[in-house]
Image 1 (tube, rainbow, N blue to C red):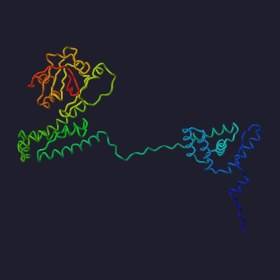
Image 2 (cartoon, rainbow, N blue to C red):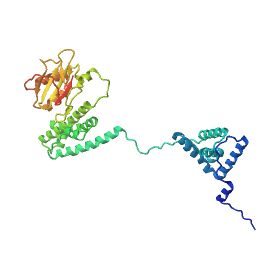
Image 3 (cartoon, rainbow, N blue to C red):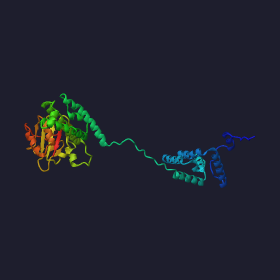
Image 4 (cartoon, one colour):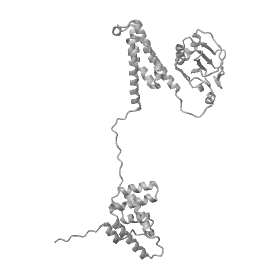
Length: 375
């Protein structure tokens, strides 16, 4: 008959092993007594904890006594190390320190050495960077994609003009949709080819083009040409005005900036498609042009001497009262476009070409005045 082994429960074993060893102080004990007490404690812990459980004793001690950074570091090292590589004695010392049981100095030094080895010898897990399979879209590509959507929207409106007369203001459309300067320029460029094609048809010099548009009268073709020309022009104007309106990077305050700080101007006016230039450019300039959107008065200020124009409060100063003047515009759009884009030679002829009475200028600027150009 085979002899059956007798199994004992953990509870029965605990009656024999007793409770967890504890002591309050090592004072008064001989080295031999301390050694026996430590060996008994190690025997009890060896019975109580299996290899997987005892490694957690170090983590619990660190969590109870250390800062977050060290907790994270040691916990990571312990979890990354195989249990059999961690000294059981170090684990038991960690438990004794956690419950406040004093240990000899040599055991304390041993425990700290073991912590250092655990950290130093822990496997280094190389973090593999995941490569995204999603294609990276550049800022320029995003912009061009958006521009394509804008062009489609404008073309949907413009296509109707080939069937019936329409009223469409490109500048207002750009303003309502808050289009930035660069996209606006690209939108306008996309309509240049068709504008030029219509211009060829109106001139009647290309027989093939004339034949292609034979369904339209001369008046209809001129209306279409005017529409496409306004789209290109408005896009360029909006782009220029948007770039002028951008605030430059802040620099150290200069004397001209301080003089211009109190100037009150109208930043922009969408009705006449104009924006104010930086008023600090007036300092030392030879000429400045302003336009009052309420009275439609266009004013030109010519410098009184070589020092150029200057500012005082919210007024232009040091201008020549004999050559500086203002005139009321009947067709502001046409004249303002020439003021914004004309050469210096062309500017000298503009004010004289306006058939209106000359008026003296005061130099006063206000919130209905746009500083159109400074040279």
